[in-house]
Structures are given as structure tokens and as C-alpha cells.
Amino acid sequence: MVKATVSSLKEKKARGEKISMLTAYDYPSAKMVETAGLDIILVGDSLGMAVLGYDTTLPVSMDEMIHHTKAVTRGARNTFVVGDMPFLSFHLSLDEAVANAGRFLQEAGAQAIKLEGGEERIEVIKRIVSTGIPVMGHIGLTPQSVHQMGGFKVQGKGREQAEKLLHEARMLEEAGIFSLVLECVPAPLADTISKALTIPTIGIGAGAGCDGQVLVWHDVLGITQDMKPRFVKAYTELHAVIVDALKTYKNEVEEGKFPAEGHTFTMREENIPKLY
Ligand code: KIV
Image (cartoon, rainbow, N blue to C red):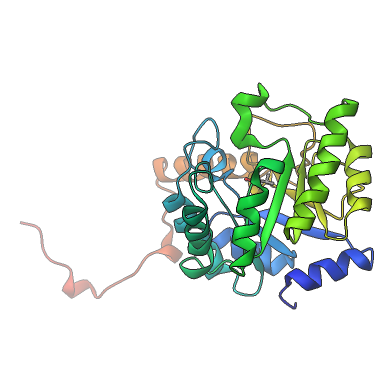
């Protein structure tokens, strides 16, 4: 499998081929995504909720993102990895934004970064792109603004908001992003935006008209139990499989069935210390 690049992803769109992206947050999951041959791994700041147990993505820090991105790039050396810029890592100054974006490539070995926001982020995107760092945009439902949006809600249903999202998508493309995540927008709007852009759109809760799809590792594998949004498809139910395995382990330990002979080491009888 050939590692994707910003240009090969754009070419895929031009050929009408769909792009597959999945989140991963550690070494073993990254290895599995690479073995399965997906195009892109996103080390999303969904890390905060999926792995670290926060209620939102807001508490996630740059150091946490770098720590997990490093593990992912060690596990998936042949997959295009995108690091997600956490809340406040690109808002305070342009220099700080460039420095933080740079950490994903320089320290963590990612190939690109993603950041949330539309028109208000054009300047920072231009600055980051001008340093040679590929930027993936993200509009629609942007979880870092969850409190401003009044919850995790579909965006762009009304005429005015739909026009705004289309306008922002065009502005972001002009600013130099190589790809755009559309989260929780009605399918017809995502389809229109995808047709308006030459760069690929990657949808989550945005319908089949996007140029690619992204989902979260724990959702795809049926590990998530608490929050199951409508747009998620679980391709297996690992939560039940894992809990079942753990119960069996517990029972076997308690019943003295584990470890069995095949799991143990032996020694000569005469070398066993005597108890007095
Ligand atoms: O953080 C994340 O995982 C994301 C995707 C859901 C697009 O931003």
C-alpha cells in the first residue's frame, strides 16, 4: 500500500474514488488501521472523550495530542497521519499556532494538521500553510465550540447558515487547505460543498456525497457505550466481546483453571527450595 500524500488524495477525488479516514490514538490501533489499508489516520482531539474520559474535547492539551500522535506514527509508518490542533492551541497568536502545528510534524512525525473553524481562522490557516504544513479544515459542527453552538447539533439546515458554510468552504480552499472535514451537516449541503471544491471533503454525519468518510475508532468497533450518534455505524460489537473475555478470565482465575500447564514453566524437582 502506497502512503497517501496531499496530491494523491486530491487525485483520488478527481478520479471519483472515495477516501477512508479513521481516528486512532495509540500504537496498536494505528497498526491495525494501517494493516487494513485505510488512506488517513486522524489523531483527533476526540481523544479527550474517547480515551481520556473528559466530557468534551476542550480540556485536551497540546502535550496530550503530541504524546498520542507519537504512538500512532510509530504504529503506522506507511499511513498519512493528521494531528488535530486542540482548543486554544491556534487561537492566541499566529506564532504560537505555527509553533504548535509544527510540533505535530517535527516531534510527532505527522504529515499534516487539522483545525476547526471557518472565516475567523483564515489568517491562521494561511500562516500555517505558508510554513509548508498541510492543513485540513473542519466546519459544520465544530466540537471545540460546543458551548457556543448550544450542544452537539446539526449545522447548516437553514438557508442563511447553509450559504455561510458554502462560502466558508470556498474561503478555506482558497486559503490553502488540502482537505475539509464536514461534520454534522445535512447531506444535500455536504454534497453541494463537495461539488464546489477541488479539494476532497471528508464527512462525518454529512452523507454519502462527501469525497471521503471519517469515524471514530471506538464507534466503528462498538466499544463506545454512552453516546451513540445517529451517523455512527458500528461494524462489530467489541464492547460485549471484551467484557465477555474479561469475565471468563476472572472466573478462570477464581476457579484455578488459569494458568493451565501450557502457560507455566517447570524446573527440576531437586532445585525446588524445601519449606521447613
Ligand atoms: O476529533 C476528531 O476525532 C474529529 C473527527 C470526528 C473529525 O475531529
